[in-house]
Each structure stands twice: as structure tokens, then as C-alpha cells.
Image (cartoon, rainbow, N blue to C red; front, side, top):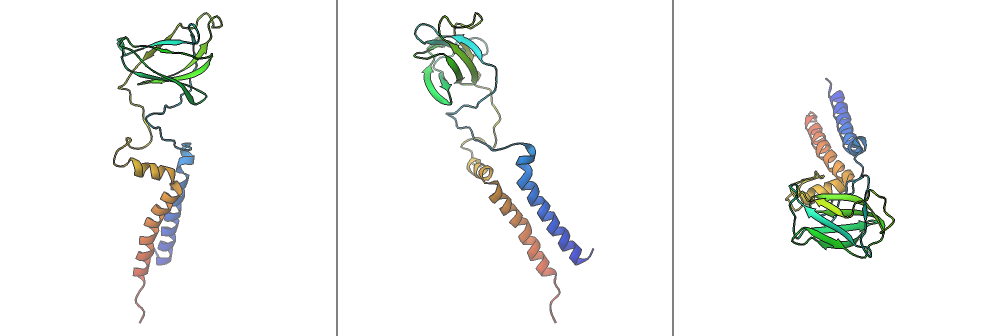
Length: 192
């Protein structure tokens, strides 16, 4: 192969590689990556379960493990409209109460549990509505997330790379192109 064709092929290869790196998230449909902080919860799409409030807007519930045993001192967060409206902790019997709530849709999160609930005021709930929440806590459930474990040695670098794909692709392209360019200069015969 002639030297000219070799240079053209190297340039085309570098260009295709760079384009593939830039387009990869869009081709995979990944969209924007949003890291989940430990105090945040991941939104899930699911059919809300109906639950009726007791008394003057009190949501009663119980946290149990996979075997049905009570789980004490477990935080339970209730969110409406993306904002936390109540945070309670289960007692020794796994029971909790969130007071002062109104009817509406709530996202309930606890250790190893996430759910969407349609909460009804007393005397307005459908007949099949539950009298309270039963949350099954699964602390051993690990949901996959993008990147290394939080606080790990590569988490900050991996997060930066995920947030700056164009700069990262440029650096990778430069790492490919510069050695090629330097190599091409060495191939020229010395002038006599």
C-alpha cells in the first residue's frame, strides 16, 4: 500500500472512531445520565396502589423483611410532586405513621423498597383500597446504576467522563491522532 493511501486510511479510521464515540449514547438511546445520590430515590413507572388514610390524614404502615418479620428503625420517605412531604421511622414492631397528609399520589421509598400509592381521604376510597401500607424491605437488593460505586476510587473520574462526553471524545481522538501524526513525520526520508 502506498504511503499516501496509508495516511488516508489512518485519517478515516480516526474520524470514524471519533464519530462512533460521540454518537454512541444517542445510538443506544441512553440519553442523559443522572447519578442517584444516596438520599435520593429512583423514579419507577408502575400502577399506583390504592390506600385509605385514617383519621385526620394519617397514613399507617408497617415495614417487614422478606420473611414477614418486623423491621425496626427503618426510614420511610413520602414524596409528592418530586418533594419530600414526610419522613418517618418505623418503631420496634415495624409500624409507622405519617400524619397530616391529603389525598393524592405519593412515591414511598424505604430501604430496598419503592412504590407509588394513590392515597384516599376517609370515605372516598374505592372498596378495594388497603387500610395501610405493607412495605417489604429488601436491603440486600442492589439495583444497577451507571458507573462505579459511590465513593469508590473511580467514581469522580467516571462521573466527569459521563458528564463531558465531547471533551472526553476529543481527548481520545487526540490520543489517537497525535501518535499517528508523529509517526507520519518519522516516515519521511531525510532531505539531501
